[in-house]
Length: 594
Image (cartoon, rainbow, N blue to C red; front, top):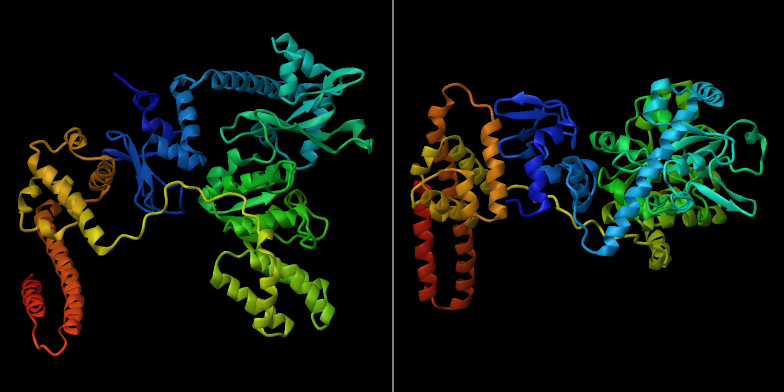
């Protein structure tokens, strides 16, 4: 009997179906493989095991269950992965309390309403005015398939077309208001979006949560109307958290290990159409801590392509400050004055790709900007340049990198580094806004030692041929780690070499390790006749493990002997020292004999 939604999801969903919806899997023996979506590679090292319902990349080392994969590839927390997979499995998660249930019910209803609105706007492109919109979008460089991919639409000029459409389908004005789709005036209640090209804003799961609208037609001549209008914040949509296009760009960001951040919807769409699959846009707001937190799940490299006025306390500068403080590697796309990505892509897509490739580091760009604005030979110019650049340098978390830019600034201004450091100290620490703590997720494991690799190899060989366990006598046990000792003891007591038995013997950490080495044994290429050499390889691994253990013991004894010699004073060989020397001699003989 299934005791939890997690177990029920694992029972209903096949990991091949879930992973296969993101990646193209190819059969490889008993398993399936693909190019890893989490790092760049030419030869597939990403494997999926149907029998164990797990995945692992032997290139970058990540792996785990169906939940781990969705969390990694979607860049979401476990709770969100649980809800997403429950939806795929057709499982309704039980609410924890009545208030939670009410919020979930309202969220679901609003989500359905917003999706219906998105379909309504899309349908309007088939109208007479909608055809004019498509002609306009074509002139801007959008292909028909791109318009469909990004679900662009049109909001009619009429006052209540959308509201009447929603009311006819059972939704209320209050619900439309909570979804951010109406405005109230003294004259009544009207559609929020009228005579506008509509850009649906989607969440990470590609669900419509809000809209952006660009003025179109005769209304565009009215200077009192905003050129762009966004949905106000709702239960579904928070502009400080959403990044436009991230649902489509997240895989591209992982593959290219960088995010290109632009300002506008058209910038994002045209850049994507031109082949830049890692482009997203801020959604009517300056770059925020929440957006940075989301982006960092995918890559720490950020390429900015928008108005880069770094002087003064601009919103752009504050966003960059946050990114630097959070450890992002920031680069800048330098375009001609007055151009934006959409302009460049429309005229020359290849030039856009070249601009991305040759993006300047933030600090190179900042130095160029400051030095071009002020005279570095005058006292006033030196002061202005330092005032502009020091806050950036202050925010660099890495001391070595910070030292490099201190040296660079001192060199440019023709002054001593000590003077730059003195001015740097005067910048108030409280100005260094720390937006959020670093994620407390799974941290990268430390690099494997030679001992780790050898022990891992021993268990790979055992899974390749279970009978090899007979060649591991008690004489070898003292030379392996505590975890290896526990596993070997359990294996030797068990009559059946199966995971069902192992699950009754070992904890979660050891089971994860065994799943990993068992999969390695399955996917590793074994040449014909190599099976006969497994025993010899096992003996070689054990011999090397013994030598490593003996060397560690000898090193430890050497330190003890040095301490004993100091404590012995004038006594030539005190009893404690004599005992240590005898142990050292015994271990040395064992090492040379191994």
